[in-house]
Length: 216
Image (cartoon, rainbow, N blue to C red):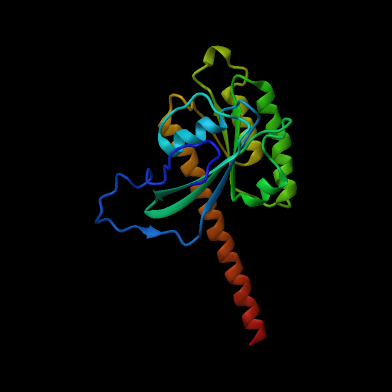
């Protein structure tokens, strides 16, 4: 694991409960690269570290961008997940061109107590579409800080409407309280990345096969 935040290596966390004699198939699709995106203060680091270490930490150095590598078993396959915890500079939600080109899947995070953080994701989604030339890519929308219900500015219905417009799922959660929901959100996005790669490979194989038939 590489990190600017000085966290201990969580890479064994995904498989620590497995019995030694259980042999798992390793995914043939390489690393699953996840970029966690959103405005400053929405809880990107809290979500990432909660997933990786199962611990909640409330304070972070938000001037440092960190990349973590983590192994987990998803649907019987050992998957290596790279999580990029981005920093937001001038409200860009961390969506620099190099980040968007690097990632296989995107976790778009807002906080339910900030309308501005929610609205900013529409512009971020447009930028992803531009970078990916309009092709469908794995995305999940996460509404964080649901434990602060008394301060809520964004309803669940509004979050659901955004997710429908983006063609993806919505998860409302609290990094401080909902370990299961946080873990499920990352795993769901990983599954979608793997499925996307599988379909892309199948399409590529069909194209190569058709080309081979033409050549013969």
